[in-house]
Length: 105
Image (cartoon, rainbow, N blue to C red; front, side, top):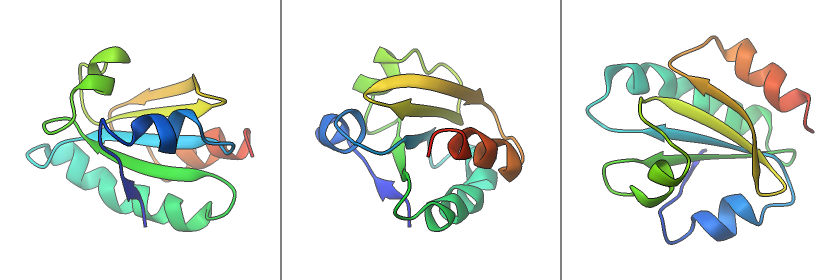
């Protein structure tokens, strides 16, 4: 299951992770975000032990969304070593995210 991350836990969970981290910036009112949610959950299962998959509710946690220039949701950022290494704005097929993560694990 994807981990819910807040502004308070972002540093420890995402930026200090030794594994690649897929971050889903989303909001409850966002239709495309709800469409993407099952894919994010599947990715968290598929990459268990190899990568970390987290969700950030941009309505409740705006600090890191602003820091990384998230203007549209859903936005997926992939981090490795505390740095953004890939980005996907909008909904994409699961294979797109799988390829991005596979390249990093």
